[in-house]
Amino acid sequence: MRKTTRFRELLLTPRLEFLLEAHNGLSARVAEEAGFSGIWASGLCLSAQYGVRDNNEASWTQILEMLEFMADATSVPILLDGDTGYGNFNNVRRLVRKLEQRGIAALCIEDKLFPKANSFLEGEAQPLASIEEFAGKIRAGKDAAQDDDFVIVARTEALIAGWGMAEALRRSEAYVEAGADAILIHSSQATADEVLAFRNEWGDRAPVVIVPTKYWRTPTQVFRDAGFSLAIWANHVLRSSLAAMQKTARALAREQTAAAVENEIAPLSEVFRLQGVAELKEAETRFLPRASRGDRAILLAATRGVELGKLTEDRPKAMVDVAGQPLLAHIVSAFKLAGVHRVHVVRGYKKEALSLPGLHYVDNDLYETTGELHSLALALDAVGVSEGALYVGYGDVLFRRHALELLLDLDADVALVVDSNWQESANLGRDADYASCSSPPTRRSFGEPVRLKRMAADLPEAERHGEWIGLLKIAPPAWNAVRETTAELLKQAKGGRPQVAALLNRLVAAGLDVQVTYTAGNWLDVDSLYDVIQAGKFSAR
Ligand code: SPV
Ligand code: MG
Image: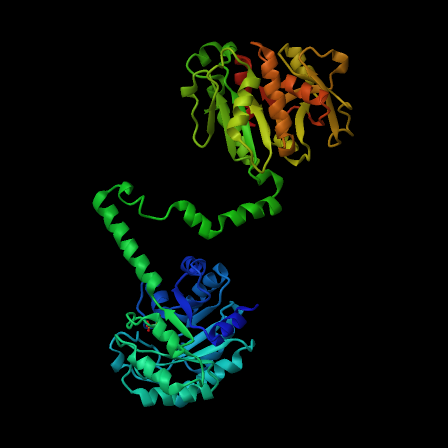
């Protein structure tokens, strides 16, 4: 149902209904959540939240801007306190059109002169508009409305200005005649006598709205019995937040510690909830490209790298300087640039020397007696379940962003990057994980689906299709298999140090599709002093 129609129904039900004041998106959402079926966009409170007076100091477009946030934040109808309509009949026409465009259900205008003043400030001194002029505004507003259910409430200030009950009735009669859907009878008295007398005289000519700000002592049942349609709590949210803000500000100024207020104020999680953070998370799973969906990386960096001698006496290999930055920082940058922002690092040797900002750490304190698969198992436990994929890399393997992007784009449960230039490592005589795949790295197979058959350091040359560069992707559907197989291998290892290659072979043997994407070069395994120098050149390119 349209908001306009819902507001009209609120007005026309025989029950007394309530509107609560709101003055921005957040307070509007609070009002709706508390159970109010409609909102009063109070001129006083909108002015106050801008820090200005209720004298039309805020422009009508500034009011409109805030109304848009309020309407977006809520599903219940909003009645704007539109003061005098911000000008003459023509301004009212334009106002009504803009309100309809922004999803505001109803408008209340009052029979004073622009710029108006708040009714509770020397109300008797306030001039009233002529009945004819104000009736013209009402007719113009009704004429401009495209939606037949758009409500215009005519507010008479006759009692506020001290013109008496007969004048209030005369004006209300004229306003309803001009097309007003309801009358707001305002009073600044401490009792409800005036508005009750009005209601009594008025009968059922049109619904009557009240604002019991000053006569708050009157029991609500009195309003019900009198047959009022709507009661507006016109400023209570603003006043309560003002009291809370002042209390917090004073306590912080006095105590100079947030401990003075932390337990008194709303938790951040409540702010996030009201902002709708959960909805955005859900939308991300539908609309964001894969790489940005909470993907995470695990970097295995627990070993010392004893081959680097003195360089790793006081730090692990991942922290060795390469072109002015720790090796690990280069690797983390590659992940972040590719959109993988959450990086978990498993550290072991000299763990206190491994601390870069913005990373999550997992400690393998048994790094001396366990191997990389033990580190991976610890990391899998720490990372937990998330929407995105998991990328596993090493704290001593540099790669070009391009190599990682091959994996990001791959729609596979488990996938790895294999370098077709395996001869280079073989010539240097370094340790390598050679891969045998379902098809060799021909020009065609770049970009074609290729499966891993087996991986081993001692794979016969005839079976080698390439060398694994140490980058692995595990998508959510394969998580359980990877977790369980890792645990199994560790259990069977009995003091041995199983490698990630063993995990991949076991997954293949179990029938899981482990996909391979070929690259040519684009990475560097830092295993020796020579490699450290090469790494400097690699990262500078
Ligand atoms: C407002 O809330 O701005 C009103 C009601 O107009 S009152 O302040 O009581 O006049
Ligand atoms: Mg007002």
